Image 1 (cartoon, rainbow, N blue to C red):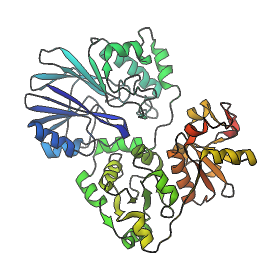
Image 2: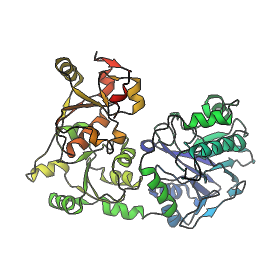
Image 3: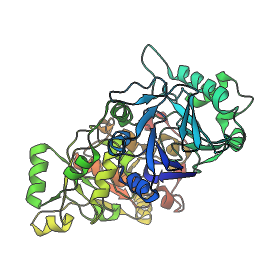
Image 4: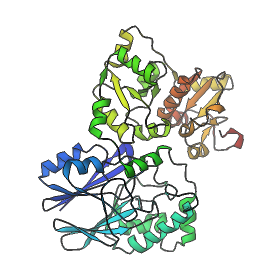
Length: 470
């Protein structure tokens, strides 16, 4: 038997590849399936099952393409209603794979179809449990994503999650390994560990949600408190995972197309395409195509695209680091953005060689920011999350979270000169690019963000005046 966790850092997502006696199962696969096919071929095994722990909201799963290319059976747990063929396993059912088996444990709460798969080794002993978003390392799945008006509230779902954990998972032996679908950085929970697996026994000791003396009322209160609003694309990705989606191969064929400058401009003007610049932030602030938006491929790329680009159907053209164009298209498709229409061949150099003008964003080091703060009052925007702002921020700065910039554009003034900072400089460049593209030309990025500001001597505070929150 072989168990392999395939972890994707930018989504903080864990897929799993398990094989036994020439048969394999893949749990919660990513959208692009070729790496799985390569692994199956290399190991000379047949994919028998594709297990889905629930309808994922933060990424588009690869179950449909994988099933078409291998003939494997898609397996969901109870209550999973789909528009495509799949096997709906029963609670307690045993699914054989080679000389091991998986027991289906229906564990609703995060969503009503959420199911964990308990793996039994060759001797029949419980070995590992694949918990999806029911149980994380250090946390449990948020209970607000599957609530329905007039039916289930997040408090209802939290109570159901409490019962699932206490009745289905916590009675298992302490040495059982917990393999969740996500780790730190995912928006599917609020307190996840950077570790990507652990023993159940240790989780019973350190996971706040598994305290032995915790009442259901205490659990409900703790898991529903301080939940940030889910990214807008979550509901749309969940629907794609239920109803189906186009072939990833077709998305890649359409999106990874090299465009001349004329072709690039024509698509932008005739199809109202978004120019998405995915290079390094330092390259973007130095010069970029006017009205382009920066979201760097080397940051938390896909989740920020999902939070900021409001339509999955938005036509997109790319400025990408040379040789990484297919990677950008792939990572967009992981979160359902399938309408990429090509990339500018030669990038910004080709644009300028064709006689086109480039734009830039003023970006200053922290010592220059400190000097200007000491000379005149400045309008400073902190684009981090509210929790980060509340912990510590530049005195008199205004909270302007990047997550909600589309809803808060009426809070900024085109006549004001704004200085933007975040944690390290990535988010502030994204925010500056959006403001500039929408006509707010007077923006300055503070390089290094709070990492540099906190050691500079600039006055900081944790005092939050309600009037400063936008």
